[in-house]
Length: 99
Picture 1 (cartoon, rainbow, N blue to C red):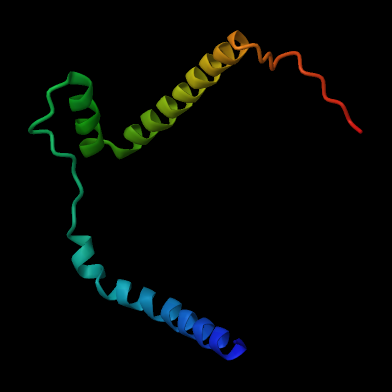
Picture 2: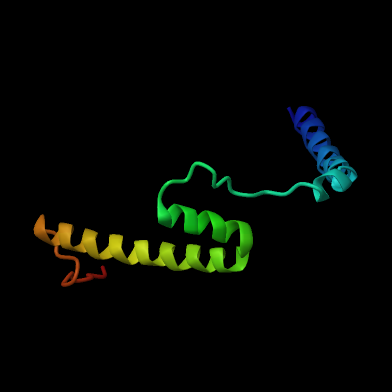
């Protein structure tokens, strides 16, 4: 069993050394790759705005993503607090009892 484990570990070690070399070898082709959002069939104004923002200004797109994710988290937190309090689970006045 130990011999099998050592062989698997040696194989994984060799693969982890050889795979990055193969990725670096494809670097010239990857430099020519451009990732853009296709805006030809976008109908909504907000979708068009974010697709164009992704294509033109990646930094502002990332800022919007962080702000909207935080906003959604706050919204879900408050809405779940309201739902839990209406079901009878009041999490605001819980007492922590240490034994």
